[in-house]
Image 1 (cartoon, rainbow, N blue to C red):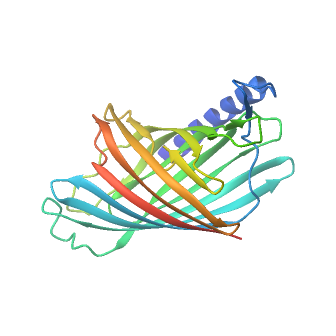
Image 2: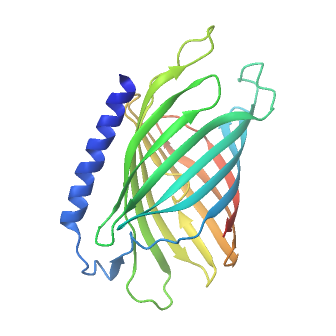
Length: 265
């Protein structure tokens, strides 16, 4: 029943957002920017990510992520499906004795979003699946849009692409000897801004790591996140980045560094 309530709430949120997006759409310029939310590549993209996360007090985690983007075209609706999976190794003096640094399955995610040619924004949803023996399922709706300079010439600004997502937890699980993890309901905000450093190089803020408000715990986590991307050719892109918390009334991590190799085909 909890899962059905989550899905019903997500569908209602997506429907309300879709109605708003269609009613608000206008092709007019906004501060010299044009809406680019429906501009998307039809390439298939496979990404290999590496993460190092510090929790503080000597506790750390290394994560390997595999991420795949697949274009979706259903009549006049065009979108993207994203699949994620992750393996994580945790280690540190305050972690359980069984945390020996060995990589084990962490989570998987399915995200779908898209829109039609005259929509002002994209709408979609994400489902989070815990692969370990501790965690919980999460699901929720998301809405995003994107703006780029109307002038197609050289601009420092590449794009402004905000995204908001609300995730609701359910179906918690833990080993029989442990208590269930606290329910996780949270809002994710990505005020993504891209800057052109060159013809093939960008500096992107809050693209990979955004702000989180935990409505169950009543706290904020706000990081500074920056990533440099460099496109080698049409099929290969490299990136390296990092994030550091600046507001942490809801604890996630102290700092993190990460990188990726992205293949388009």
